[in-house]
Image 1 (tube, rainbow over the protein chains, first blue to last red):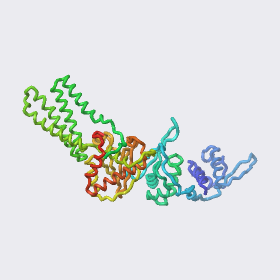
Image 2 (cartoon, chains in turn green, yellow):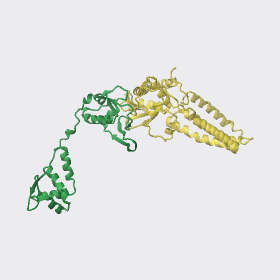
Image 3 (cartoon, rainbow over the protein chains, first blue to last red):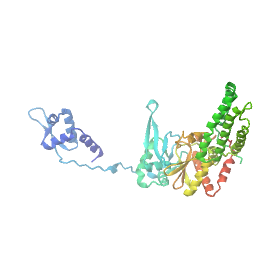
Length: 197
Length: 271
């Protein structure tokens, strides 16, 4: 299942009335939005939106009917069980650009603050200030241990830049942490803390 | 050793501020309330002052501060006894004793001062680090920099930390996995000694972890003490090398040479 579809389903499942709604759908052969709304004490528009949403997700079937009045929709549950699986690997950062061979160092006058961990051997957080004037706000990025060690070994401004893999080696950060290191590097590059050379 | 200094001193007059204020209070008090009250005030002030070097002695084991404390105590005694010795008072025959101790301890204190035995060595550390660094670019960053690794045993660490603390080269703080050497720079030692300042991570420090790895952090205000823009990366590396060399000399039992290296810089006593 696509992540966006899953998050939409999550939105519907998290409604206060979702459980009662599914109870109706399971026990009724078909049901209209007005019937469900009156049964659950909801506004008809709320019931309509909920059922239409489930129809988009193909959990219920939507059928137009006419009974001597203007047409309306009846809904039938099409699935007796809900199950979903999302491949989270789709978010894994796949070596952008030259990946770990990219050469980086800290950018001069980046104007950020680095908090050193108590042990003194890694950075625990980076504080950046975003915005201008009254909108200026502090943003603190807490780092994981591999990220903290990586940043600790990042070459200084004006120092000889190093590749990400070389810095990771110096910092004794194994390659399995590559995606989270690259995520941090990308973020700090966007914030003007790191420069690619 | 002839060289061009790369650092600037803090205002040396700050060190003379307290003695000048004490003398002003003493003479003002004498003029307004009479000589007895003036001497009592002097005795009281020096009795209070004698506590501080004692605290420094207990925290660093630096013997020079014990002498300083003894001098203050002697001056305090002189202050308290003199009013009873004026005009053939009952203490007239006793007054030479505290005066004798005052002069002796004063001479000893002068010796300690002129030989830089009670001088905090932070400026020397900055100067030594700057010696090997060329000007050009700044590249300042508040991040610490790993500078290398030394082979050192627990016994040698204990010996070295005792030495640097006793010689006022740096204060030593123990963290979970690291030792932090914090050179005291810029007349702020009293903040550490009196426990007013306890967080040192924003200051200049050299960290030594359990595996012997050295890291250096130089604070922005200390970096600005250099008269010229030094390459910051090299400066941190150089400061790490200075400490690595100190550690090596300590391992070889040549601590005397560390002191000689710093004395050879001939920085002002009050820097």
